[in-house]
Every structure is written in structure tokens, then in C-alpha cells.
Length: 225
Image 1 (cartoon, rainbow, N blue to C red):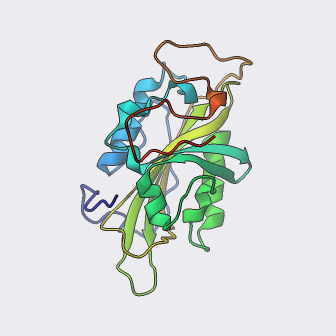
Image 2 (image 1 turned 120 degrees about the horizontal axis):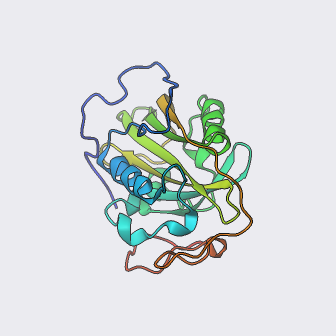
């Protein structure tokens, strides 16, 4: 699937300065793209007061328009979060199947250290992260994108999962794309209280440990076992 003209506002990321902003948890993380706004809005709806959503709360049928641009991360160590589930747009940007790869695969070499620091903040604080990205691949046209990463609780009540999306501008013509971080916006969130078990909620997905999405008639969403 190819997507063109995602960003609503012209001049995205025109400032080269890196913006590191930690806001009060009551403030919504900033986003510019329609896709990121939809994913953020869905994540916000799943929150109960100051509590983060759980991985098992997610229902892909509620994110149909955004699913090609959406991914789920599993943190396996500091600076390491792998893509467990992703939509086709994510793989198209890499020119290969992105499932199982670290999310840092999208980073240009000079940006990776900074990106990994921000990624750890998502899980450790916890915090939500929105980033303006830009890819400069040889003589290919400049490509901008927005990445959004939103923390999720695992079955044990710890922040070990994340819901995210990447929405890029223009057609995908020269993959793989490696992005520089032009700016970022971190939003501080309340720290969760770890628990040993996860309550069952009617209408939700199967238990988080199944590590699969509920079956839906969405051809571009792959299942990871």
C-alpha cells in the first residue's frame, strides 16, 4: 500500500533544532498528521484516568484507517524494542518485512544514539514520544515523516509494550528509508503500579501473552506468533 500526502500542515519539521519537551501528563502529546492524531486519540480513549492502556485492551477493528501505519513494540532490553506487529506501510518504508526487527532500524546512523535514549524514556518514565523525521537518501527527494510511540502495560502491569505509528509524506519510491530525528516531543505520564495478574475485560483481545491481534478482516495486518 502506498500513501501520498499524509501531512495536513506544510513545512513539517522546518527547524533543525531538537526539541526536548516534558509536559504535564494532562496535556496531550502534539501530533501533526491525521494518522498520528487518530492513533493518539484511540490510545487516549483506552486510558482510565491516569492509568496507561493495556496491550490486551487494543482492538484493531477500532483503528482500521490507521492500521497500515501502525505497529506494536515489545521491549526486550534497554535501547531494544522490536516490532511485533505492523501494517504494510511500515514494511514498505524498509522495503522488507519489518516484523521482528528493532524499531531503531528506521534511524540514520548519526541519529540512532539519540533515538534510543528517547525510546528508553518511553518505557522508563513512562512517557509518550512524537518525533518529526526526515530522510536524505542520496539524490532521492527529501522525505518527512512523523513517528508516534505510546506506552502500554503488559500483563504484569509493567511498561514493556508500546503502540506506535509512522506516517510519511509522499510516495514510497526509494526504500529503505533511514531517518534523522529533526525534533521530538516527550510527554511525561504517571508511573504505573506493577501487578502480578491482569483482569479480564469483556470485548477485549485475548490475553497479552498470546501476542496476537484478534482476527479481523484486515488483509494488511500480519500476525506474529
